[in-house]
Each structure stands twice: as structure tokens, then as C-alpha cells.
Amino acid sequence: MTAVLDNKRAGKAKAGRPQVNDRDKTATRLLGSSAKNSFDPALDIDWDAEPVEGLWHMQPERMSLYGTALWDSLSEQQRIELSKHEVLSIARVGLWFEVLLMGMLAAHAYDQDPASPHTQYALTEIGDETRHSVMFARWADKFGGSDYKVHPVVHTLGKVFRLVAPTGPSMWAGTLVAEELLDRLQRDAMNDDRIQPMTRMVSRIHVIEEARHVRFAREELVREMATAHWGPKRYFHRVLAAAAAGFIVRGLISPKVYASVGLDAKAARKAALANPNYRDTARWMGEKIIPFLEDVGMTNRTARAIYRRANLMA
Ligand SMILES: [Fe+2]
Ligand SMILES: [Fe+2]
Image 1 (cartoon, rainbow, N blue to C red):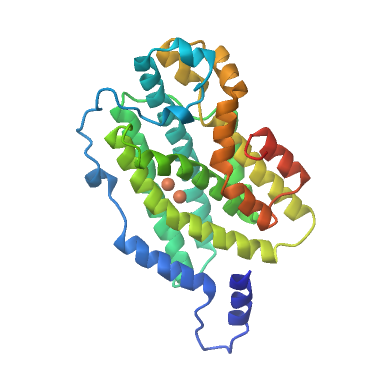
Image 2 (image 1 turned 90 degrees about the vertical axis):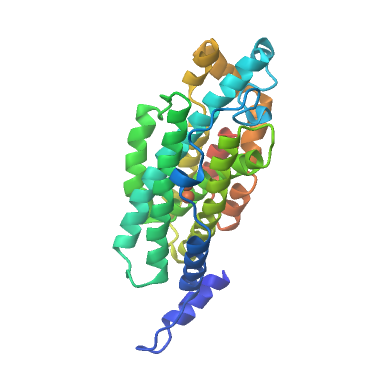
């Protein structure tokens, strides 16, 4: 909340005397970090490298069927093949949300002073997300392409979210959920030598650059929550952010992935949703962001019920 107070003080400063507020201080730091520590996946990833025989594409313990009878029925080779499809499905959801986020950030920047570090950082983040989306698309293409786009209903709801969320704090809260859930998976994957080098490099690039996005969104959310009015608007945004989180978590693994190893999509999806290990994984993914949303006041009874249903909260 100190950030909010600093901004208020800066706003009361004498006219004509430029003040560096807390918002711009953060943005200046993030712009410096972006200049020093950014990647170009087109050059920084060896796209010609072939997958290494016997290595996983994601951590088996984080896969949707791990620990189930269906998992036991698969050979090691099938499990590794499924890991490729699950990680590409997750990346496709990440790409879907990144494209939405780019639209929201552009709309946010449209209303701001382009001379401010805050606006310049928002524009820089759009650049990061552009490179990430191309990286995810190219990664999927490298492994034979994938048809794991989000469900058509979720695709349409995404368009609504892109228009409605920037009217309040759910833009930042929804962004944080998408970024921080993925971050937990990728942070572990990038340091695990059981994982394919390409997955590790994609994860590393994403983790390093997303850390800035998370800082930016967390601080913006705190500011928005301090100024948002009580009443229907606040209720609406709390529920909207939770609904977005629910759709993201439920959509991470497309039922189509199971066909890649000869499993029935419906039966495997059912087993995944009932899998206690996969539920624990969802909770683990939400372990950092959900308490933060609670702390800043982004939850209410309805939102908590949605987070629980999505297994993001105990
Ligand atoms: Fe990203
Ligand atoms: Fe991001």
C-alpha cells in the first residue's frame, strides 16, 4: 500500500515540477532490466536441434494422468509422447492469453502519456509477449504442430474478457493468474535435467521475462484495488478474475492430447479431473498467486468458490 500513498503524494506535488512517482520508478527499473536481459527466441533457441531420445517434455509428476490406472497402462515411451502433447497444450493456452493481454495492454497504453516510463514499459511488455507467442507457436510446429486451441466458447469469452477486464482490476488479476500458474511449471522444468533441452530453454526465456510482467501487474493491481470503488464494480471484477482463472486451469490440458497415445479422450479427461495428484498440482500452481489475490482484496465468497472448484484453493 506504500506505493499507493507515494502516488497520492506525487499527485499533490506542485504543478510544473515533474515528480517521479512510484509507478514510474518501477517502470524505469523494469525498462532497464528489459534492455539488459531480453531474449530473441529466433536466435537464442536452436530450432534445428532434434529432441533427445528418452527425455521428457514436461515433468511427469505434473502431468494430468500421473498416478492413475490409465497412467499405469501406458509404456514409458507413451508417457513421454503424452508429455509432449500436454506441454504444447499448456503453451497454446499461454499463447491464447498472451494475445488477449497484448490487446489489453495496448488499450491501457492508448489512454496514458507515451512519455511516461509506465506507458513505455506497457509497450515493451507487448514486445515481450509478441516474441513469446511466436516462440510457443514455433515450438509446437517443431514437434509436428498441434490443434490444441482453446474451446470455441472460451475463445469467445476471451474476446469479452479483453474488452471488459480493462475497466477494472480483473485485467491485472487475470493476467497474474495466467502468468504465475505457468511460471510455477516452467521454473521447475527449466532446472530439471530429465526435460528436453528445447523445453528448458523455452521455459528459461519465459520465466526470466515474465518475472518483470508479474512485478508490473502485481503493483498495478495493488494501486487499482486502493482506488476502485466498493459496490457492484468491485464484486464484478473479483468474480470475473476468478472465472478467468477457472477457464485457464480447466483448459490447460486439451482432451485431444490423450488421442496421441491411443486413449479415449472422454475417459482420460474424466480420470484427469478426478486425479488427486493433478488436483494437488493445480493447488501448487496457485500457491503463490491466490494468497496474493486474497491479500489485496480480490476475492469474495463467489470468487473463492470458483477458485476452489478449479482446485486453486483448498
Ligand atoms: Fe509471455
Ligand atoms: Fe507476460
